[in-house]
Image (cartoon, rainbow, N blue to C red; front, side, top):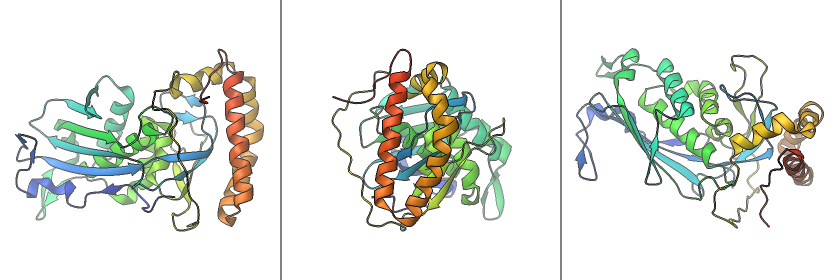
Length: 312
């Protein structure tokens, strides 16, 4: 089902932990200055595919894309972030395994971008943390997915959307900055920008070199097409043999078909898909979805060496 929330859920009390008693996690009590937030975010399934970057550092796509956001109650990422001045550096666990943060350029890009957007933390009219002081806070990040990770089910999209929204809550960034947050999430994982909205969402490729016009926006909300259902059949829990980041760059560098798709196919297909969604025309929606899926796999076969993302 298309998501029942318009944004990932954030615990309403989470961003104001300094005013709360020390909490415990396992056997470890939190520091008195701890600021915590908890968030869940859904996956999204693209019906017009994102495949290829024109700027790998800023994660700017070669074409616009469109997706439906699934119900966060079915398939989701969940993240809890604890910030404190007493913490040293950034520590993260994903599905119970330690993940390097400082060694991950994309995670660090998201953290730095959010620190630049941070607002003060106030209590009883008094500023407790100034915006520029958030960089002095270390982070403890606990994240998990309730579905197979790196298996082609958009775990990076929900995971980075969740991380972005959760850290934004810690840094007191208001919901009115949602469009800007989609551009930040994009720097962590391109498709993550679309998981910050419910319903059907388009990621605009933009044209500016700084990426300021490459963000996600909602086409229709989650109540627009209540009859729509998404059936997800997990036929393999194994990780993809070739990760999406590497695979799409191979396609950009070697596939003539991808160039044709970007220039001649996607713009018209985006217009047709937006109309199909707004009109709730399932016949047109289904045909466009399968046509784009087939062309994506054709691009993969046109890549050298060929890429295979279909299971037998």
